[in-house]
Length: 481
Image (tube, rainbow, N blue to C red; front, side):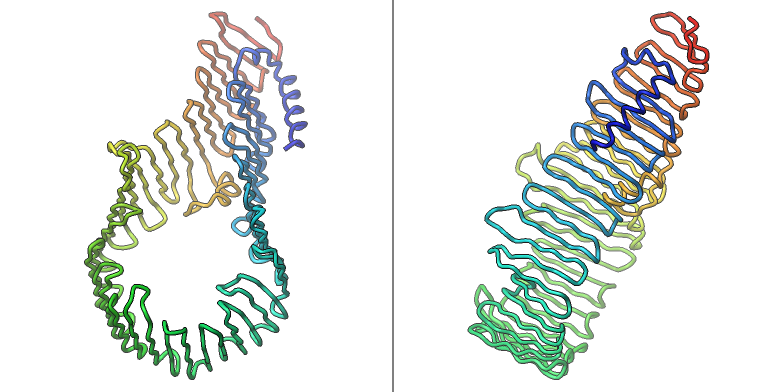
């Protein structure tokens, strides 16, 4: 950002010299427009400023909440309190840096994670097929996939070693040793808690203490399993795929015929009974916390009650043409209760609203793809732009590509400052309390502050204005009266 200051100061000097602007001292705003080469504005009241070069391709700005820099469509950088992010080659590249954690991704070539906690010394580096790092205890690991690798705390394993993957893999977990040859064909595991022998797809056997015992023959056709529940009791499962699946325990009763079409499930853990006949077209669920009736894709209705999400209702009509969702938060404080309403049309268009405990709207998000997006908050802030060609919300996409694809943008903050532009900045309209700027590039400019106003053609080739009931005239940048 330090390199940008000479550019800003040079642009300010050239613009002030060319326009002969002497009235800027009386304005709380500095507003200089030589679109598409240069645009700069600064507010002495808020300290916020914005700079654009070459239209939407280069932009940087600073506000009380964040600072950002974009070189579109290559990358964008944004800094907020204790958080810095860089989006590059979106959606492939992303860098995140916080007080406790940093992460770098460039799919599929680079992956790097670092924990900044002194008690946790873990880190992970991946560059293509080469990786290295250390776990939380500071033990180092490394590898060059698929030739050789040695890892700790990865994939539910305490330690993994592979050579010419999938030819040979050795792992340790809970004191057990597991050996795999030509994964997934052969596996042998032994130790204090697990015994396993597998020759896939012919047969497989696994026993985990007294808690679990399973076997298969000619996978996936025949499967048998016995298990113990953590709350007590035993369960058993049998499968003759795809014709029959049967499971019974003190907590679950399940019967499936011609998987996945015809299903019966009675679950005490989930507190409901479910019928699918056939799935996914006809479904009926009834329980203590859940109810669903679905005739997919024509119509469906679902309601749930949870301790964390409160009460939610959801239904659809001619899916994916239209769906509706409403959720009530369970907060005991009436002032903190929220009602969220979300309507979706063909999945890519939606209208989301949030209401407070008294039913007042405090947030609106509407995306009518590909026409436009609108965001409004209770504090008076608002965002609107069209078209909205990106059918989903992603910060990297919106920062790197969004301004290149929009014909019109409007932004308003809670203090009453607003900024709008069309055709990538050819037309601009900026307002602050008691002040307004309208620009058609450097061709036509209009500035009003209080009762004073000024209109210029070509930044002063011809200019007229009125200040304190005194008219002013300017020709070829020279004041006539």
